[in-house]
Length: 349
Image 1 (cartoon, rainbow, N blue to C red):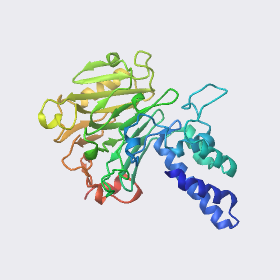
Image 2: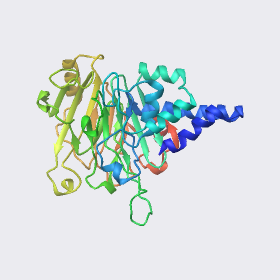
Image 3: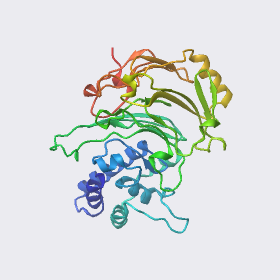
Image 4: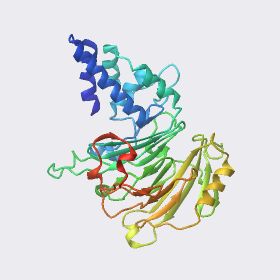
């Protein structure tokens, strides 16, 4: 539904006679493009808070997202559309492209440069009706799926906010779907779903799924982990990444009520260290094999950052992460700052 607001703002930026209004409209468009840049990877995104149950249930990513099509026009990243070099088929968003083409409004040059370079990591929080958390690196975007938001709509559920999977966005083929990516779908009961366990290079959650047709046997099992070189042909050349994955099947009744499995993973850019070194440092930093789905767990990353977390806390509006580097964080989303903010604002005294 962003396009309902974006198209009129683009018209103001292009055709308003009042220069102040024109400038403010351009600033708003630039602001939205900077947000899209944080949320996306190579032109696609999977943000939380899809409004209709139809969008929560469907596997597609492109449908209903006018910001993807807007930036496809502005930036020229169109590989996700089906077709060949001479022709791409825009199944959704052509109306947004036409409107932007007529307006002639272009993207800010500094934002455009940052979209293509991705030369720095960025860990970002947004808070509106649901938390949004992203970690953006050169070869991926790690996107938290948000929290279900219940609305008083006569039981139709048409106005609820539906949490998306926590997703590792990497390389993709044309017309990508949720099934193309590593992801935590979350609580099997969609009204209780909370997918917000994301830190730098790290994610935890319920109901982990591999990408469709992924060869999970390409990994190395060691010390309770499965290590994947995702840059290898054997593992599908998904990204220039290494992954350390720890997943447990649910064996208790309490756990099986909410999920088939639970766990966490860490990813590292393969240009930062070699695969054997990654395996060695993860195993050296972490001695315990088992983790709990509803009790405190500890993990020390390959960059020696200490994370305490619970994949499935008791309260839906509570962050899965308890502390980072021994500093406790504000876990109740109700007390998170509105808008865009930094991790330092969540540390408790």
